[in-house]
Every structure is written in C-alpha cells, then in structure tokens.
Length: 155
Image: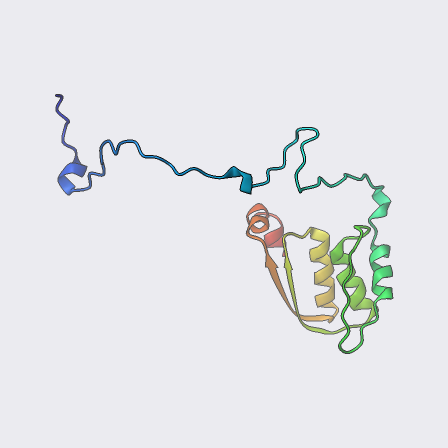
C-alpha cells in the first residue's frame, strides 16, 4: 500500500476525496414520451419544418408599415390582433402608427428579444419630437450580452 503525501487541505480539514462510491443503477427512462425532430427523410413527427421563402429586398419596406397604420382606427375600447407577413420591420409600424395618429404616449414599454439601430433611431425620433414622454425597454439577456459594446451604449 502506497502512502499519500499530506497536503495543506488535509491539515485544514477540506479533504473532499470520498473514494469509490460503487456502481449504482439509473432508472429506466421511457423515451417514447418525447418527440425528437430528425432530419431523416420520411420520419414522421408532430413538428413540421417551415418552408424557407426568399424575398426581394424591396419587399420589406416602411411604406408597408404605413399601410397597416392607415388601416387601423383606434377607438375607445378597441383591440386589434394582427398577423404581419414580414413585409416591414415591426418597429417601423410603431413609428408609423404613432405619427399617423398624432398619438401622445405618456409611457411606452417595449419588451423585445432584439432590435437594430434603425429601431433605436426611430424611437429616439419619437422621443425628441414629443410623441413619447417615457420609454421603457425590456430586452433579452442574450441581446444585451451580444450588443454590450455596440447597441447598448448607443441606446
């Protein structure tokens, strides 16, 4: 039997060597409860891969956001649920709607996963022209970490 050299951890009582804990059995897991999307051809799952569409660069336009803003008429107690087709950046819609309706936002809170510099400039214009008094941005931790050196200081 070999001798082990004493260390400072042994003398301080911080020895975490628990030795051999032996073999133990893991419980059986029923994997049929999980659907896994596979790339194998012909394999069926309940998930459908979306089709990828190529769009012309002129498809995504601010004018399309203005068209939607024009179609929405806000009255007291009104509510609109809209599915947008990707023909504009949603941040552009906010600017188009607020300016078209000459709306005054005392407090605007936006919760988003990300935004670009154009969105930030648009919100800045709304603030400087008096459309928004207070703006609260709730952004994702991922966006914050990715843009800590670029867009976060810009905001």
